[in-house]
Amino acid sequence: MTKTIIHNITVYGENEVIPNGYLTIARGQIAAIGSMDVFQPDADATMIDGQGQSIIPGMIDIHIHGAVGADAMDSTPESMSQFAKALVKEGTTSFLPTSMTQHPDVIITALENISRYAKEQGDEEAEILGIHLEGPFVNSDNAGAQPKSYIIDPDIALFKKFQDAAGQMIKVVTIAPERPNGIEMVNYLTETNVIASVGHSGASAEETETAFAAGAAHVTHMYNGLTPFHHRAAGVIGAVLLNRDKFVEIIVDGHHVSPYVVNLTYQIKGAEHILLITDSMRAKGLPDGDYELGGQPVFVKNGEARIATGALAGSTAKMSDIIKNMMAFTGCTLSDIIQMTSTNQAKQLGIFGQKGSIAIGKDADLVILDGNHDLVMTIKRGVTVYRA
Image (tube, rainbow, N blue to C red; front, top):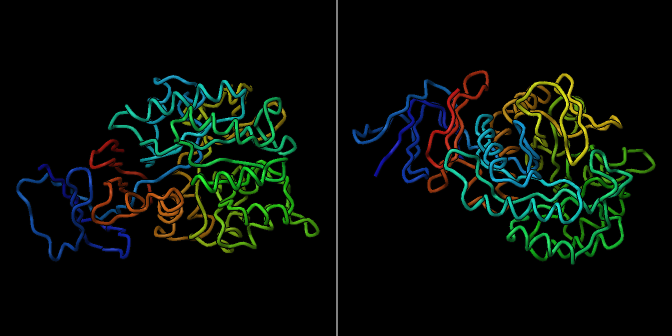
């Protein structure tokens, strides 16, 4: 049995931080964790000197459209491979490729492609854990970069077709619950163990509370695509801040949400209820210029992506940049970052027994960071897939 031992490293374990520790990997899983004080060398193991750096769980991005020229809607295995290979270079070891509002037939083709590809993807790629369906069941008044011409009211029969096309891989659905049949769909999603996420929505606080009561579990890219908070009309934002147990996705790229509001959200929700996402599109990792999202032209300038209306069109941020921004904006700890990039996501997806923390028996999806929290190495299921 081939073993890898990473030693002389700070291990951010599930229940404790070991300042001068080691971690053993065998058969793609974490086999042992401990202090160097009790470390026993193993002549048969591959040894990696951690050089006093930090090791944390691999990050899970549950809302991401694309990277390096590829997009989840491209509907080709080559594009999915290009997409998944890029993510390990930012510390993301697993993800939910995210769809866009489009004609139902186009969405079905994309879902079929993702589902097929997930069964055959390579070891060197970030793992596809499922699919995030963003649209078409949203509110055209809150479309953002979702193409308005294809937005439709929630339709359970159509969703069933989507889920069949996806091989039952749809794990999250962004929905505007205030639209006709919205609450019925939230109920259906909840009953079938799919996360209903309020997003691209103009729901009132009361309508949002009704969605929460029906099972809606979190909010898609908090503040973006939602009616602005007002002291006489709190809307989705007011309801989710008041209901502290509900999760919020947030894009901490410095463009989508101001640092002040990021910190305000962190102070109210705590690390336990924040899901850091990139919501990145195909321009990530490429120069400024002209791109495409959901069939619409996107213009990227200084890393900021917008469509012709001026609406933000996803981000070009890497998860490795987002964690540094989050720490700078809030003063949060690396343990908090683990909670917001891995633990919460794994718990929401029902896979915390397998991923989301460093514990014996879990998948060896790991990231090594240096003293400046820059990415040094990414390990996926025990295989080193990226070195800075």
